[in-house]
Image (cartoon, rainbow, N blue to C red):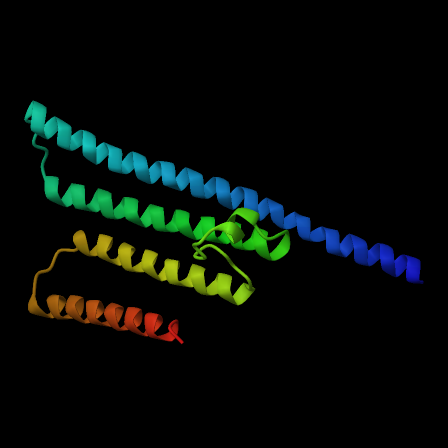
Length: 170
C-alpha cells in the first residue's frame, strides 16, 4: 500500500506543473495587451504629428485623444493584472523566482494566495475606476439630477479607494 500511496502522491505533487499553462498564457496575454495599449498611444502620437505638421484637425479631437489614452491605461492595467497573476502562480506553485529574490523591490514577490488575491484585487479596482471614467467621457448630461448622480458616483469611488488603501496599511 505504501508503494501505491507514494506513486499517487508523487503524481499528485507533480500535477502542480499544469499551472505552467496559466503562467505561460497569462504572460503571453499580458505582453499582447502591453503591445495593443502601446499601439493605441502610438496612434495618438501619429494623430498629433498629423495635426502639427499637416494641419489635420479631426472632429472631437480632445474627446478622442483622452478616450484613447484612458483606454490604453485600462489595457495596461489589465496587462499588469495578468503579469502579477503569472508571476504569483509561478512563485506559489512552481518555484521562487531567483531574480525577484535578489531585487530590492518586492512589489512582484508573492508569498501566499491571499497576497496574490490582494494585489490582483487592487489592480482590478483601478481597472474599474479607469473604465468608469472612460464611460463618463461619452455620457451626455442633460440635467442637474444626472450631474448629481455623476458627482455621487465619483464620491463613492473615492470612498472605495480610500477604504481599500486604509485596509491595506495595517
